[in-house]
Length: 287
Ligand code: GTP
Image (cartoon, rainbow, N blue to C red):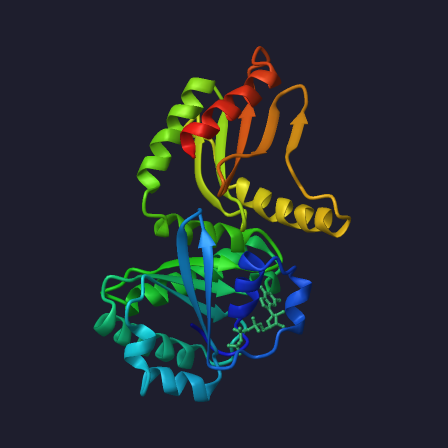
């Protein structure tokens, strides 16, 4: 949900349809609601409703169609265009959406994306902008406690936000986390990350050292997706990746039918062949 031109269809096309950021310039305005169902993590069906943001449609969602639009919602993603000239009007529209959400789907989770962050040049101003939205939105929504992210289709921030969103939607995440922790411990890997196969979103990550920042892998999602698209263009599908240097070895391998796994080892005594054999052995268990 969000005003026309905020970037809703662009982000959906990047994450779920292999568009590049440049491709989104060709997108037209969404007519009414575009429904799509994407398969995620194998047998999880994500029903995405991309609600066109032109006035006539918004009026319709908030009046005639409110039960249809706001009923049965698991997650509402509200996209704010940070360049808007009418921030207060934007907030009131958001308020109206939350009133309806409270009526028809009070257990939904709300994510707010402050979008087009690339338009702000420096990191400090970006942080201030997100903080401003965070404070303003926290004051407004007492039932829903929205999580706020700054995003842009031009960098990995979009993958960061969407990884958090889908992390919540995968029903058996606790089980996956437990098994991945065991895998990391048994293989003595420094870091292990599970990516969803189609979107390359991070679904789960583990590090031997709890102080390690794993956010860096959101950049891997974006890089691999671009690389994979380039591979398709030269008709040589992406299969796996291996990087070895003096301080670490990194492997990205197809894992279960719906995931890729990334494993980083730093112990030079662990032979790469052993790590690969461990991945092969674990594959059956995780499947
Ligand atoms: P409606 O379908 O009318 O509701 O609009 P929408 O919210 O789906 O907007 P859409 O995705 O069509 O994007 C509108 C324009 O914004 C496109 O030209 C995109 O290229 C551009 N855009 C989307 N995301 C970003 C971003 O992160 N940064 C910048 N600079 N432009 C973006």
